[in-house]
Image (cartoon, rainbow, N blue to C red):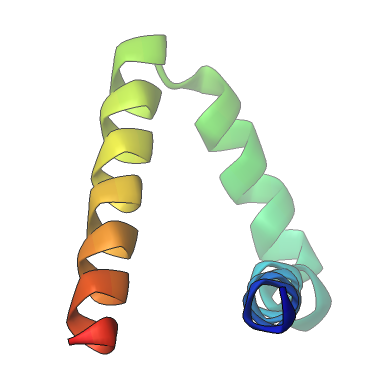
Length: 61
């Protein structure tokens, strides 16, 4: 549970950083993302999950 909470906290830090550092750029990115078709968002989400799983698998050896 401790590892999960640490990973969750790190994820929140990484997700929040762009909004803190460059809120005006993030606003433009969000507008662009809203305009993307669902198929592209699904493929991107799947690719990010696969990369995350690969990173975890490599880290755990």
